[in-house]
Image (cartoon, rainbow, N blue to C red; front, top):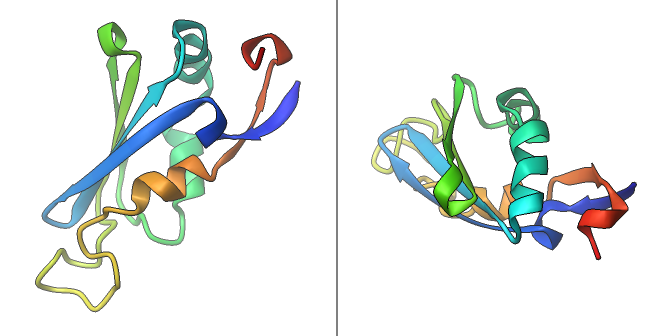
Length: 110
């Protein structure tokens, strides 16, 4: 096992809808996707974003694309026109997700 940042095994993209943001995480290989599907849970994501996500976290699995999409409710301080936070549209939430560290089996990193 090796501790790596999610950015070493996946790419991500994020956006917003009202007061929630979404973060799509695309695994670099099908094997990594299987690992993420098992280990990148809503509880893990909720803990990672605990300082900004005050609502539920929902996960959607897009197996045909090797993508997990997370919806972070109540994570934008009211949304683009109602908040003073810097990233009212959630554009950097994907980067924040990619900095998450995970213990990954060595064979997935080869």
